[in-house]
Amino acid sequence: MRIIGRGDVVSLDGAPTMNSFIDQQLSGIVSEVTRDTYFKVECNPRYKGILPYAMQYRESNFEFLNRLSRIYGELFYYDGRTLFFGTPKSADSEKLFFDKDLLNLRTGASARPRKYAHYDYAAEEDKFLRFQADDQIPGGNPLIDDVVNRADRLFPEKGVIPSNSPVYTEFNLQDLVEERKADAVGRMLYIEAETQTCRITLGSVVDILFPEAMDVPALGKYRITAIQHYVSTGGKNYSNRFLASPALIDCVPEAYSREVKAYPEMAIVSDNKDPKNHGRVKVQFDWQKPKGLSTNWLRVQTPDAGSSKKVTTNRGFVAIPEVGDQVMVGFEYGDPHRPFVMGSLFHGKSGIGGGVDNKIKSLSTRSGNRLELNDEDGSILLADPDSVKMRFDGKGNATTNANISHSINAGNKSSINVGATKEQPAQAVISADAEGNILIDGKTKITIQVGKNRIEISKDGIITTAADGSIETLAQTGSVSIESASAEASLKGSSKTKVGGGEKTYVSGGKVEINS
Image (cartoon, rainbow, N blue to C red; front, top):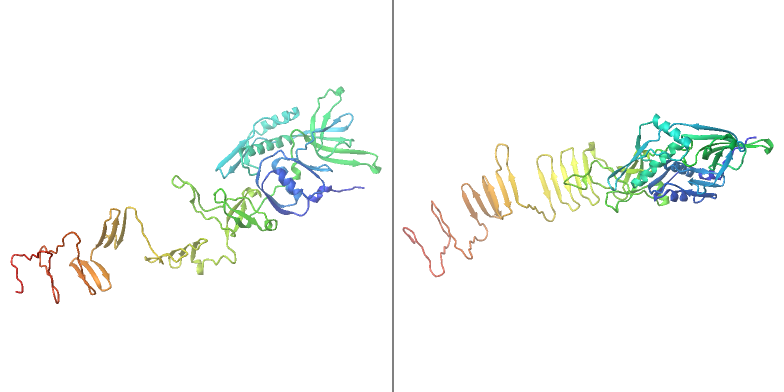
């Protein structure tokens, strides 16, 4: 009879689901995921870095923890009583003698590349992080030393790959590199053995010894990564076969972990008040709503972004999504732990398209500021929420409307030029400068008019006409002169003409005629 079963840990391997965690260590994530289990959980991960964002992506709780163990090089196993994540706190080992406990023993070696450099990018500091593992061989096992030296000769090139996980600091990156190196070294040596002792379990450490008569050095300590138990009919005979790797270099068996790829997914912006003013947003996926969760602060992809010597910040296109906007979220390298906002989306209630023949292109802000480009007539409209508009009609005409006031400010000089072409200069010019000079220059005529009263200046002369009211010329402190340098000067009233002075009145000329 053959009995196949699974332990209590199967309760973690339920339906695939989605979950997320912000700024937590591995220990906190494991504790939260296993909070409702009814068996003992021992969590002691070696990696102590903070995970900016971790996502359980279409995985059962068991699959998620298993993936975390692979990414961070942590042991993850269940020995029948306790679920272990990370290095077991107990350092006890079981001594197994070849002539007493071991029925047979086989060692195996597999050369693997172990030289890696990892890189990552810390956006907040705008700093590229890179760390390369040293050549030191961990473990202190003479068998491993020989295998690794041969592997290094076989694979001399150093690989460069992205970090297994996003990191905050160079120290976190160093930890990941060292764990990857140790994991590769740990896979290079293994033992297979058959015993009749029931003192060993999955995950336990065995110390392989030989009798003194054999004069063979001990193989060292190994951690059991797989074990099969055999019981004969009637239960009279028991044996087991196990596979183990060096205990001082814990590695995660490759066969039990799968790579997860995340695909773009829609979300709603839940917050855009970035505490560090970096233009980031938090978003909420639909599956996060019932749990009240959201992402950490995410960078927003834009058509142009950067800085320059003159523009140290916000050079480029700045349009941070508003709270409530619908966005598409992508994942760097397909890693669920590395989300970013790819762009925004209209939906049936927020978008009306570009009109007939897709003629309208526009940019609108939350308050109602609008820039509209019309490809049908070539016009451009710039408007604010209070009906101040500037319009270019696409036919050479420009119009500016302001409901309340309109000001033009110039620091040194301001000019309005009309009628200039390649063949001739401007025919009408109004200019003003910072020294208080104003020039009105018309090549044909200048007219100043209020109602029917007007002043006309032309090549033929100056005509001042007061159709309504009177014309007054008054000098408070100086004199008033009316003079014609080359022709006649006339002073005439239709009914009466008065010429008067204070104390004296002078009328002079070559010949003076009165009532002639």
